[in-house]
Image (tube, rainbow, N blue to C red; front, side, top):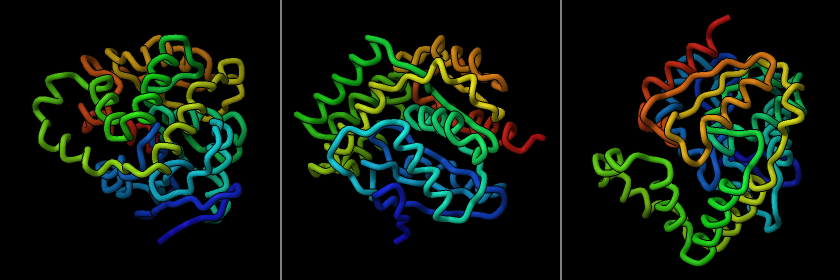
Length: 263
């Protein structure tokens, strides 16, 4: 299985397609499998690299609080391991926060950035959601945390229409103590993320996407990214929330590919 030794840990990754490198970075408590729909679409145009962030999937899960900068270092280290000088980066939610750090700390490694349902810093309400999710995972397991996130991120109608497939996915959520610890330590990185004052350092062309009904990352926080990143543009999706990448998948993927493939 493909592992890269980077930044002191073994990082699990996969590669697909040919062309300019494109790295997809998933969100809190998820894994590279969350990009399964996008991989065959994006790999028609790019060399797509997906990874399990530290604490997720098949990557190592050291048991101490992580930082977003640390996970950006992991992603940059993966480029080194693969001999890649520069790549596009696409991140959803926590993955978008990692992308912010990549743009700030490694501008020479970044071609274009795409951030979905992400923010530059947390507020009391957002951190209350994170702390509550962490408590649920600690006490009831990652599966319960996944259900909590499901109802926060998606419309009731979407859940009803996709109930069987969504419920089947609960059984795929890891239940071992390491998975819970990984979630917990990633959540601390989200809770402490604050790069608002540094966003001006991002020189890469950036697409910021958000759902207009997002209660996890309110649209005004995504708009703050657009205001603060010099070369940023925005794309809003109506009548959807944090899970817009799944609820209006075709429209979102078109926006991503249009942005990445244009000069």
